[in-house]
Length: 403
Image (cartoon, rainbow, N blue to C red; front, side, top):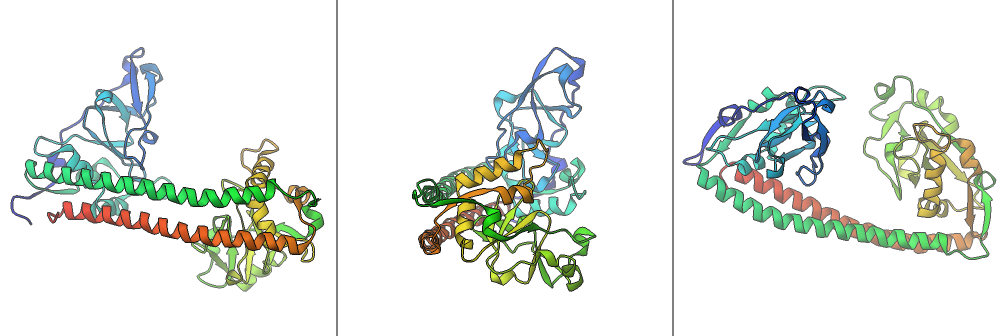
């Protein structure tokens, strides 16, 4: 350990905090900080609710002070962590937070930064319990160790981290903006293709332009029925605009696939998500994923080869004019869960060049732009990953006495 540094449990360097019951003062107003109030992007309290005591939820019980650190114990790996600003002094937060009020030997910003170290995050991940609602206890947090130098050195470290992270934040903002701009250029060109189309284009229903429209099913047993290898089962989480994602791709055996023989994926099939939050996402089934089937949340759309090019249809369906129509279709019927039915897809009207050569010429131009967009996306995503790695490295150095 570096000379002058100490190691103590958090419980040893924190003051006790107060709990209150707003119901006891029913007409008194206060600002309430619930778990969703803290952004895990800016690490600030972004919004609060102005409530009267009589309207306080049962979890509104913890009194906060200026410079307290809020750590959300519910889903702790999401890192909903923030410092309480002066204007929220003596307000109330949810019991979903553990409040850290450091003693005089600890700078509050030093403690705040320590909660983002790899060591602390890994401990929280290991200690959290509950599958659908993972959480750690206040005791779990208090039992963690903090390695810290004398107060003046803490403040020097905080100053270094503040300046470094300010620069990293600016660089990340610029990279994110460039990433958005690259995607916006492609989407703008794509939308122009399908809004400023030639008068010679014709309109038809998809039913007249396809040999198959249909979705599959999930094997009995759900996730437990999936295999480590075999025939791919494409789910909605795999289907993204402009490409299928292989992460978490499920597999089924020959017997399970036999029961889904009516939804065997063929080369060039267009895959469309038809339920839930990812509704209307669309991609072409790549050869590498075959042999494959789809579950009930994904529909196969198989164009007639001499009428409609698959890649053209894919680009058409992800363009804003048609994407908006699909989303609107999914909201029809008043259901609480968005869904697009087979009949709605069959009746869905598209406008397209009748000549396959013209369709393929449009696809060729969009492919060139898509490749360049993907190249730029890769550059900016790598830069963002590098900046995040740098941030973690600085934190780990700072809290091991090596900064």
